[in-house]
Length: 400
Image (cartoon, rainbow, N blue to C red; front, side, top):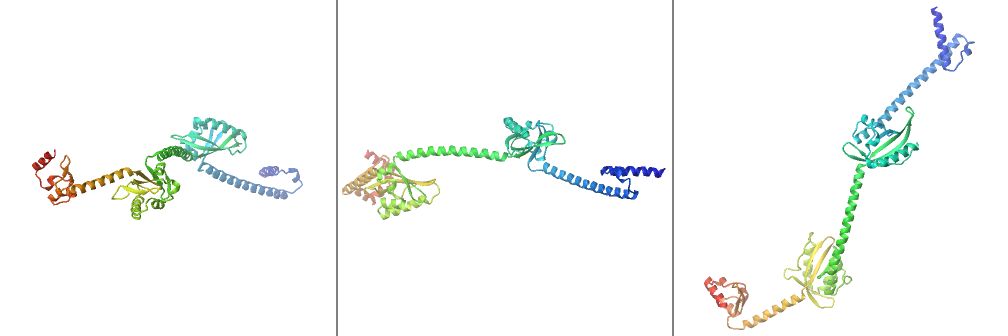
């Protein structure tokens, strides 16, 4: 009985093996039991090999799935998957950190809840185009996401995919954070606007300076750092006769206007004081006189007060024509000398004092009383020569 049961079980097993391999049992009816067992054994070995191969492939697929899952979740850029209703299906760690929400919280909302109102229309048009295209499109869109405590500029690149297991359309969206780029772009625009504004102001100032340069009542030369004459204004041409194209550099200017070698050396020493300073500086040409005597183009000489300043890009030299004033001073000096010669010939005492008692005029006869020269007395009072206050007061009273 037991033997018959085992035979029945063996028969069923053989039939199952044959059936699984597409072999009709009738084909083995003419074969011996030994031949049948050998055939079944071969098929069994083949099935075991196939089973092992399936297990190996399953392990490979499991490993690949884990690998690609790791690549998805740990990628340095944000990934988010949304369905056709804009519901968030999945998101990686980078996207979670970017928007400041947990993965569980994201899977309960639509992606539109994360988008700034100003960019809703842009995203809608982009989403509709991508979800209906059902092909890979390289278009991108830039929007602003509402993170927990900030606004984030991002660039979205989406491609269509179909989830066979759930039978639904999805968009796989790559989210690149471009906030730093946008902020830099904003800064660049602000800098550009500032530069444009500064340029406009500089042009206005340049025009104003040019007007002042042209209409100035004093002569002006501009000289670059290589000592080339850049320009002279109209007033300079009027008072000297020289125009811009008449003079090339400072050396030529000195030879044209300072024919005397000593005067040229004095000016050269003064010019060296100007050029050795980094800061703006304005000084007179020499220590002993505030004016300089220059030869004009027509050969005549004039006196000028000269100053210079180092500015951005050039030196500015100004020439104020003081010829008439200098001539008047020279004439006064000559008259003073002539007057001195006359009063020094008078043997009587001649002197004059101002209201404070200081001598303003003394002839030689009066100076000889003190054993001094007139120059040593002028500018001093009687007190300087031992007079008492009462004597000084008496002198002043007599002068009145």
